[in-house]
Image (cartoon, rainbow, N blue to C red; front, side, top):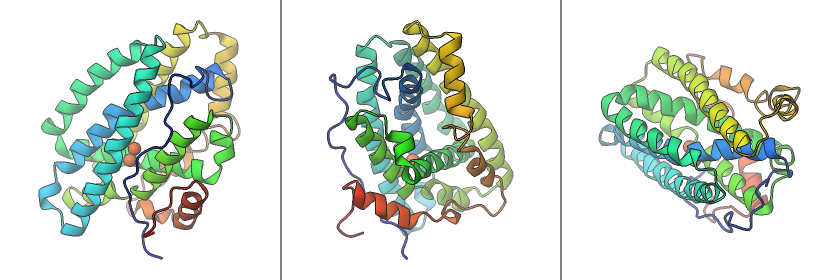
Length: 271
Ligand SMILES: [Fe+2]
Ligand SMILES: [Fe+2]
C-alpha cells in the first residue's frame, strides 16, 4: 500500500460567532482545554513551516515536494485556528492574544538562531500531533462526540491532515540533522514546554470565567489523566519516539486514515 497522498484542503463550515462558548459537551473545562490547544496552533504551525523550510535547498526533489504539501496544510491549519483565536478574543479571552504575540516573536527568532534545534523540536511536536490525530481517528466518539458540529469538522480535518504528513518533518530531520540525542532532548523539552504552555493558557481561560475552582479542576484532571483520559492515552505513543530506530510510519495507520477520509468526506479523488 502506497503512503497516503498529502492533500491541501480548505475547511468547510468553520466555527463562527454562533458556535457555543462551551462547545465541547457544554463543559467549561473540556472546552477551554481544547481552546488552549487550538490557541497555540497558529504560531506553532508557522514555526514548523519555517523550521522545515530552512533545509529546503538541500532536500531531494521528492522530499522537497512533500515539504511543499506539508507547508500548504500547516498554512491552512494556522489560518483556521487563527480564525478560532479571533472568536475567542471577541468573547473576551484577550490573554491568548497577548501570549501569542510573545510566542510569535520567540518562534520567529528561534529557527534563525538555532535551526537544528528548531527542526528537532518540530519533529517532536509533529509526533505529538500525529499521535493526537491517531487517537481521534481511532476513537472519534470519545474525542469529538460531545463537540458542536462545526468544531467536529475542524478537528476531523486537522487530524486527517496531521496523520497524512506525520513523517515529513521527521524525514527532513533525518536527512539534514540525524542526531538521535538531539531528537530525544527536543522531545523532552517539547513535552514539558507544551504541557506548561497549555496549563497556563487553560488556567487563564478558567480564571476569566471564574471557574478555576477545586471541583472543576479535580474533575478535569481525572478527564485528562484518569483511566482512559485524554492525555493519558497519548503517553505510551510518546515513549516510542525515544527509540533510536523510530519512524512515524512504524505506527501504520494508513487503512484507518483512508477509512476516516471516506467516512468524513475528506477523500482525495486520486487517493
Ligand atoms: Fe497542523
Ligand atoms: Fe503537522
